[in-house]
Amino acid sequence: MKTQHRIALLLSLTSVFIFLVFGGSIYFFLDTYSFTDFYKRLRARATIAAEYHLDKDADTQTYLNIRSKHLEHLTNETEYIYEIARESDLDSVARSAPLPLAFVKHIYRDGEARYHNGDVFYSGIKYLSQGKTYVVVVSAQNYYASNHLIFIRNLIVIGLLTVLAVIFYLSFYFSKHIFDPIKRITEKVRQISSENIHLRLQNEGNDYEISQLTAIFNGLLDRLETAFEAQRNFISNASHEFGTPLTSIMGEAEVMLMKERHPEEYQQALRKILEQAERLNQITQTLLGLARTGYQDKSIKLEIVRTDELIFQAKETIDKLNPKNQIQIDISLLPQNPKKLKVMGDKQLLLLAFSNILTNACKYSQNQPVEVSIASSDDHVYIVVTDKGIGIPEADLPYIFEPFFRASNTLKFEGYGIGLPLTKTIINMHQGQLQVESVVNTGTIVKVRIPLAQIV
Image: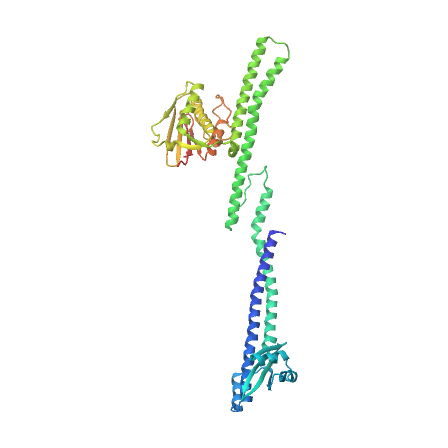
């Protein structure tokens, strides 16, 4: 069953149930009240009839005036008055009335009783007059119960059927129109695929929930489009980066196998193959590091580490690999409280990230001075790396975090375009932020912000 039909059916059944409870309650209380009120009226008539017929001082005219002024005429009203000398007379009274024996005994024993047969109601009392005992019964047809209540019952049934029809129609009508935006969204989504993922849903702005759903879905499409584009770039660049050394290795091996060579030629060819294999290994290791960051929940090992110590360790590593570097660490902004330098993170991953930033700064500035500043606030630690290198063209800045992307002015520098995306991923894993500002032929500023560890 469709959701709109299920909602319409649920609304209809709920409304019918409420109407039944409401109408049934009204009918029940009116029915109960009509019985109670009618019995009271019959009892009052029985009392008046007993006083008039059995008391000697009763005035006939007064009795008639009371009946005409204060007592409503009842349909088929009948009075029964019987003297009871002893209890055995009850049988003859019941037969002559005719009244149920149990009803007559109930009057004699309890002083009063009620009874009804269909729409004819009986109210009887036990009356003492001049030392004698009498049973006085007044009966009448309850016109209200037999006519008005039936009318009300029929009215409720007709109203129920009418309300059911109206509510059923309105429920289907409104549920259909309520789901119209969902249908439009569904039809639009069916048209979106990997070939036209640039399509977006139209935000109608009529309904807050629908607008929110549209905005969230458009945001999802934005992320998917970015992921698809990044995947295309990754595959294109990765195939190129892997293809070049593999082609070189296979070509060198094929040339060497064409004929017998001198040992020196074999050694030279093996050196070239080894060089290309090392390049492949470096690319593979970097890709594995990038892939590792995709399993942060399982592989990341969090501990409290000091960012200033990581920066100094990264510098020591670069000093061994590139002794000509001019990395200068500014300690003037270091906080006095060492807790403001501690973050919760994976030491090896953060060391790799900082090493990548410093290595790029030295490489693309051709070992000109690189300044590293470390500062802290109450919530975050900040690392700023400034170089005076070649910079990054403005058109390339939006793509620098994509794997294998390299700026257009870096062709004469060795690299694979993996270090900066890997660094970005590592910083994101630590709930930090990485920003890059650059001007061509002026330099680059890399800003890192990482939340401080909550130390009790």
